[in-house]
Length: 574
Image (tube, rainbow, N blue to C red; front, side):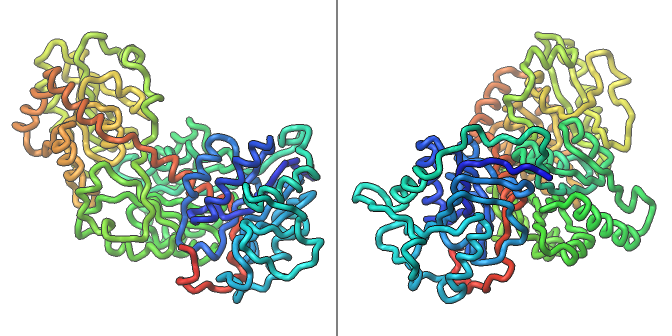
């Protein structure tokens, strides 16, 4: 049996974007920290907040700087003080038990009861009962402001306080309670020999043409808090790469790899997903792909008490994906990693309001790149050479080998130029294009290659989501050659954006003359310096951290919708 975790102050609140609620939480936590109290957040998703999937930025900042930590629901805990912030976390029955016992508890009331929007749909005694069970003690009642009238209650339930005109009511009330419950003598660390089971999530990715889906999920996983453990289920042979980053992975081949028809595969894969959700006790599933499988619809029907999230990047081709978008309702949340070229997006996702946008997502922060000298030593590149990176994708659905050969043929004529041609780990064609050239032209394999970007002077690249954003973020002048297969995203738009920005050139695969011209331009140092300055106008991507924050919210939260009255949309805050 686990010994309880000893905590100081636990606040049960809905941390999503919620006007006054976030404002109150953002005020109370620093105030408590100033009293030398350690604060833990027990996140509760309330039925009163219908359409706000994100953590309020002010609350996210408190988590980032360590003044607020997540409550781990897998462990019993004892707190000196339990605080219920507002009535909204207690309007519905929690979807799982909270093993928390508090020495004292208080319920901070944000609205006069008889004028509150939730008065008609939830009796006050029910709210008090739920708050008592969640906080582990009968809560006293305190108004957040002087003009809030509490429900009828005995004197014993209200915290005695005499607020003055200089501060809020809650501050005086909490000050009174804190004097009664001194902080623990030791930090809230685990007892020796005890374990904490993190909240697990499944990260599902298809067998894409490249490795973009898997890479985006890995980028997010690296930003998840330690209380959340991702388990990767991937259809790509490359899924095992995530183990290098310390994550668990399962290979789940698709119908083509197994040699079975889609109906048979759908039946088997549906059962595998359902079993995986149960085996790992996953709180959420995150799917990054262009088309939600029928197996996901079956999963939704089987595990409707778990969160399903679609990570859906934009820049779809104008007439593509209608059927895929019709399956959006099976997801509780759609997160859209935005695109540097998003202003030019003419696809069907642009007009939709069902997605929550986050900044672009990349795997490695530029601070994680090797220095220029370190990267050149690792790649065997001379210090003074002009180094060119050629990364044109896997070539599994669009012939880029001809483009690579054109690059090698031209650049081989410059004695001070060294080229590294990337061979994708999932490429079906394993021919070494560099074998016909001298030592200056070599094949490059590995993952993640972004750590070597500072070694190069310019690049020739496909315009897939990850490569495009990595190269522009690294300010590496690039000739973008889009993969124009009709099932791909609209890479031509990204290439055109880079050219209009002045950070690169747009060259089609079938235009060797323009490719020769663009290579000549970037062999000039002055042209490269100009392109770097233009790329510097773009903001650095922070989407991985934002998306991780949203996903962690759903994985760690108590969902208090069960048994809740359905709130009319005009009564809900969002």
